[in-house]
View 1 (cartoon, rainbow, N blue to C red):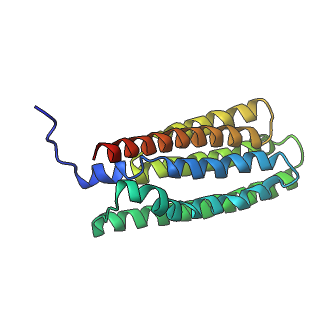
View 2: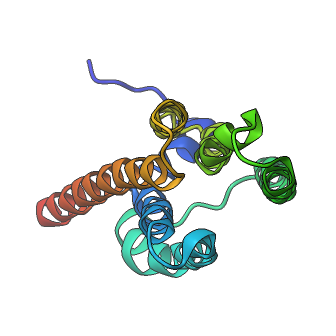
Length: 197
């Protein structure tokens, strides 16, 4: 006998993120930040990151929803999502302030201080925290994997005394490739479904 389990709203909410589009766009944002950090842009490379995430909603409406449909979640789920997003924004703003304070501390402390050695890992750690929050918010556990890659890269950047670019580029590349595979799989499955109808 087939699986007759009824999908709960939690199941639907978790599967809502399975198309890979958010992974692809956020991965590109982090990858370009990492690559830009190595160029003359330096830390200013992060300014392009929000532009990728702004593209998510219109691309979802154009690519995903015509194939998967549109889901309207309950008010309690929408409230939890909004609260989670607000927490993420507050944490992000706090992390940005922390990053600026760390930069000031490094400049004031001089060369060779422990803060200076740890500073290059901070951007990857901040993105790893955001990725962990994304996992908690969406229920998509693969974001924890991206966090792990970023944290390992951050640790390696401290040990090898490298700049912040390599762990960001690596974490961004992993998320971009994962998102591309998930999106291609989603498009292939939706094409197969349309052909069977």
